[in-house]
Length: 92
Length: 203
Image (cartoon, rainbow over all chains, first blue to last red; front, side, top):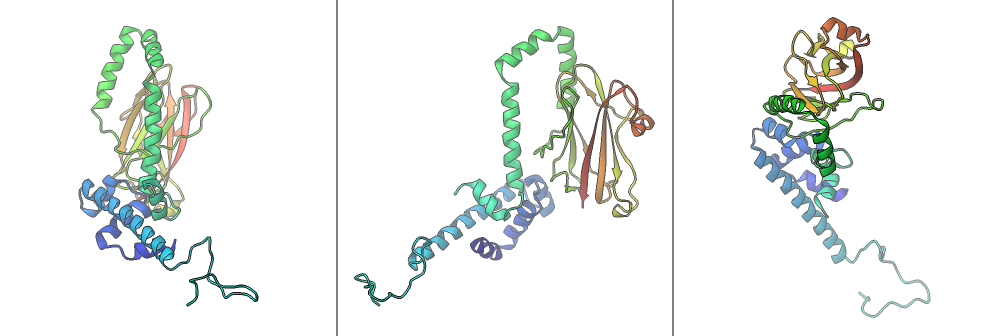
């Protein structure tokens, strides 16, 4: 959800306006277009841009996690315990 | 990740416009499919006399000339089996938050005989709706939609007479057109169905 929050915080004004009408106020495309003085096609385009943008933000976040070597299945890096040897190549 | 999942994330758990339309689209598609079944069509053709078919055609043409909702937020209200059912939807939002300027669409299910619709809205909560008064949609003094063998839809505009706030919409189905006084009393053998629907009007 942090990714979603971050993505929403960076929306352009027109996207934010459509987001507010469509996703917060649950309004129809027609009513959104009337309220914002846009065509319905504009609303549809901006709505689609919201989805594509979020999809990219999620993909980037996932990529960033992989790149940093932190994945949910592996957990955070830890120091070797007594008697444990470090795998080859993992030394700093 | 598909559009529905992205919409759910964007709405952060709340119901969004796209999700509402997607759900409704599915319902309408299913209803249309059921109506289009060949067996149902044949049975309807065999049962309907020619005169009734002609009358239906005329009534259907009249309904077709009325604007249809671009998107429907169906709220099916419970009623006893066999009773005439009337639903209402707001085209610009939900029944809980229906923006002024939207249309309120009444959808009457088919009935086995001629039935008439009466409907009016009463403000709820007194002070919550400042100076709001009863609003009449259908009555014998004005327009009274007639229900018959096929489903009908009739819409009204949520105009400036609707002060922002909550309303209780009273819908009555009767065997004859009901004058306002009788509709308000809501008593008598002529009344075969009644629904109460809560509506929230927003600016």
